[in-house]
Length: 176
Image (cartoon, one colour):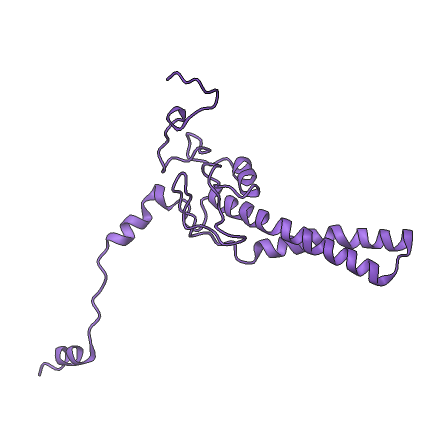
């Protein structure tokens, strides 16, 4: 297609199948480095285009672009622990250095380093959560690989046992 515009349009972009991730190799393995970089940028680990989050830390049910399911992630407290670890290792030595070098007033130190710690935590937390979700996706953990082995289809196709109410159950067992 010839366009007068130098920018590509939606018609020019290649169409990919939603079940085929862009960063998946031919042997079925997913590229961890690419997925982690996409997660750090808070993008979908599969396509790298759609956003993982619908708000600050609320994960979308699926990617808006490639429809990759994201609802079965298990990030839990991992991002918070990593954030505390990183912020603590940055703030504590810096605090000690500033205190020994310049001997600032305690209230000034507290104010500056509290604001710095909160700002750094707010910066790191969504990025680390995105990276953990991307790690789980790349390693096919917690259901991210279920679409390939059809585990969910075989599980959903099995009939569920019928629950009997107490009256019906007792009438079946009392057949003298």
